[in-house]
Amino acid sequence: MLERLKELALWGVDKNSGEKIVKEHLRNNPLEGEIFLFSVGKAAYSTIRGAMEVLGKRVKKAMAVGLGKERIKGVETHQGSHPYPDRKSLRAGEAALKFAQERREGEKVIFLLSGGASSLMVYPHPPFTLEDLQDIYRKLILSGASIGEINTVRRHISAIKGGRLAQAFYPAEVLTLALSDVRFDVAEDIGSGPTVGDRTTKEDAEEVLRNYGLFNYIPKLREVPETPKPWEPVFKRSSFLVLANTLKVLRDIKEKAEAQGIRTFILTGEDAGEAKEVAKIYAGIMAEVLRSSNPVSPPVLLLSGGELTVTVRGKGKGGRNTEFVLSLLMETASLKGKFCALSMGTDGIDGPTDAAGAFFCQDVFEKAMALKPKAYLENNDSYRFFEKLGLLLKTGPTDTNLRDIRLFWIEKS
Image (cartoon, rainbow, N blue to C red; front, side, top):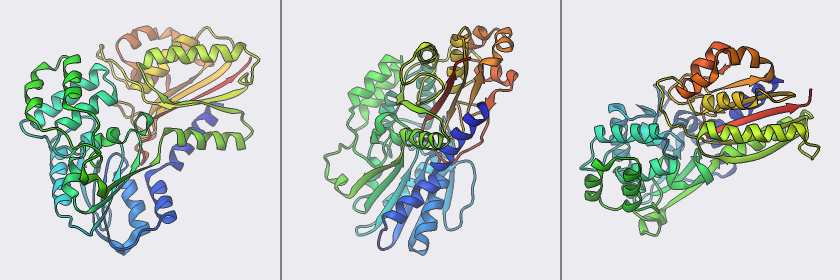
């Protein structure tokens, strides 16, 4: 069953590639006249390829900021860095601002946005510097701060996030088409909301800095003007639409699995919290399914998704998905029954590693427990644990970014 789980997961991710999603939308919702294209995020190259294929010669100018180098005919491409911005990210931010400021009234812009844009494209608002951004990003990410908290700060220290790029585009008309990598598809959290009004305030950002011990940046934050708000006139020419999210991936997988005769239930598409703690909840769910006779009794496939966090205290190598799976493995080691579990990032990247995630079935427990998994978990070393077992899931870049998905197959012995 493990191979079937992997096949379903990868099929769902591929079905929701940026290129396929954008092509489908633009073909079903045709636009008239000349178009300017700008794409940024982990799916930047994929989404702009889809748009270029549909719009063709109607594209007046096109630019993309993505992860890694890629050449696309008719598109000016820029490479940024993730999860921490670098000089390439700064140059990409400068190019984005110039592209926006060149737009004029009567022009139409399609802004293709996907997760990762917050780091791939940066332009610090004075008095902040690139070095400040690098330090703030790193400390917040490693602290276990939520994506909402992190992006609240990012918007307020940037000259292009939090609606400020929309100000640069004005008075051109801007349509943002987004792949959502955040809870509840909150527009200002996707890529830190470069083209939407910001509902948070500098006081909110200051509270985050204070809560995570970044007191030294508060004086600089107080010098930065407030971000533009949704009710300001500039956003009357800026519209926003989410094309795909985690729940869409899960629904597609459910439809595919049920067509194969597999009884399937979606638990949630909005997981959040500390990875190793959330794993304990799922271990409890699996235990309950194994001993129950309700409609969710085995054999059954359970699906969930979202994005968890990891508070890094050790010196190991890993990501939120491998840490989740390691904790789940430990919590389910005493369960009686047959089951498999898989957790992966839909972008093919799990933290600062080359894996998308990890997986296991109950038949690996004897070998796994001999490695003393508790020590690996305490050292945040989940990647090396699963590497030794040969249970890392490696996909490479997937051309999309819709948070993480989890699949659980459960049957009785």
